[in-house]
Image (cartoon, rainbow, N blue to C red; front, side, top):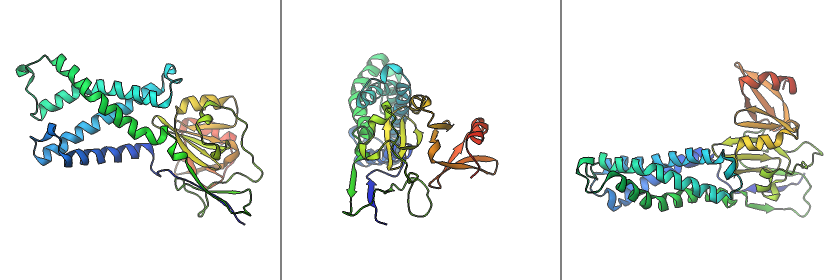
Length: 295
């Protein structure tokens, strides 16, 4: 049988891993470039200085972004505006920490020797840090907000059948093939806000949703995408459809794509039609066992 191949051009790593790798890369970059602010430091001290100046703001930005994503007032904002807002708030929160780090590394006078008040110094730091921090945060999120992970390269055989073979490399599966819809299954007719952020080529036949911090990984029978959306909000939108079940605080599965449940070493898993497994929270095991058969 011949297939039409759709390959999602996206990084295989999750958002937390991407953030960690980016932080490590930025730390090494600033340590190597040795900007003026750290030229008085020895190489080892310079490394730890930039590790703190990169790691702390990234952690703050992520926490603020999670908070922003949970505010109903911000749901109507465009993704880049939500990210910019988190960047500005994160920069303001990091400013006093930056002053403290400069003092700890001997790059700033002690509080008693400062020529200007501490409040004035922090305010100056906010204005100095806000633009670069916001730009870095926007840049790290740019691939998702601009839908670059959803760009598809389609290779179609003239005699291709209607079946789809999707290669994403992000989920375990049986053999080398990835997840396919059951024979005769069609895309769902759900018209939900989070689905509007998906590329049309991904279809609407949901397989599962997973939370990745402030991002939502949406997997369909045609592939997957990472979008800026609250997992809780997406699950709430799906509640009325009765198309699936939240089986874990970070996972929702579509009933039509669950082959059954399996127990292993006291833990329960939903087994998808592809063979991939999804963990089930202890508090939800009774509900899941009643809904799905044993795999």
